[in-house]
Length: 381
Image (cartoon, rainbow, N blue to C red; front, side, top):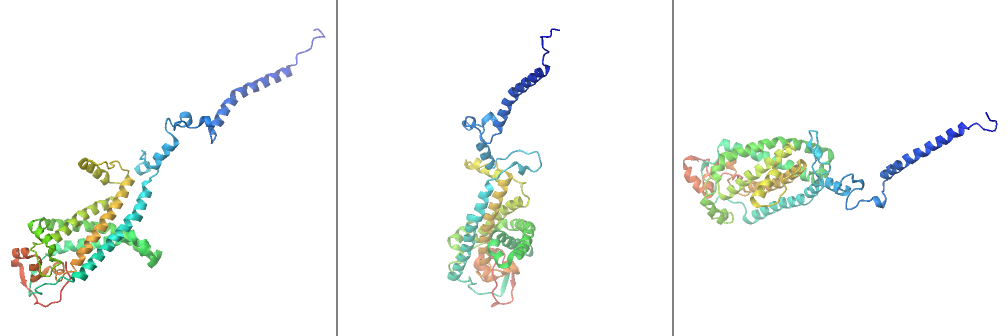
């Protein structure tokens, strides 16, 4: 070999090659890395901001995050694979509206209705006084209601009173009763009331069926009702007694109010007792839309159905309580001699002639000798 020629420096060559490899790697990796970092940035650059409501990168197509979560906040019902279909509603915004309505206007107006009914009945008693038997008690009685009729009436009445008291406790107990008796006693009473309310509802439904079957034929409207209504049943006159059959027009109004209101209570109560299994309101709204051409919602989530059931149950319960308060008044303090109809089943003949003269003519053969006149007057039916 020529001594002037030098041996190639292989170490330097490998160093240069390694450096070139590193540079090539940086050229390939850094742009991707930069894009990834840019995608992870919490605040994208203005050039990457949503345009026309669309999300950068078309991740959600043309749907923006605000529209998506607004729909979720509105209570959109999605689909789930688990048995609990309620899980399909992620956020149920109507719950706040339901709570505000129940604890606000509904509770307030219900209290006004109850108080107003009591005030009106008190004023009526102060002005009219107790409705007496004009000709005084006689020494004869007539059979007004048989034992099975009285049983059906009292099963309905007692169960409704307990249902009404326990229901009012749910609506007002925490504001009225709880401060008086304390948390522990209130919790115990409310828990017992819950069981009574749930199970006595079936006794109420049975009583409702019984009185409907027994009395519906006697409560159909007829011509005698017109005269009775025009004369207000003689309630404001001491010597006016419009003729009536077994039930007068006022009693017929109470009967149909109890039947219609009671059936409505039973249906909404059933939906509350077995939640998320019925769709009464969606179906009812559909029929109303078809008949009246309205635009009520016919697609309701199971939670919306429960909220509407609870509100309607409360409204109908308050209505029924007001009706029954009037019925209790006229059947106890308000009228002499009528309570016997649902007590012993036998009423004074003079009382029957004054309030149900047409019925007496049809059942005159059921007159019995009584214990003599002048007996202590009894509360009314």
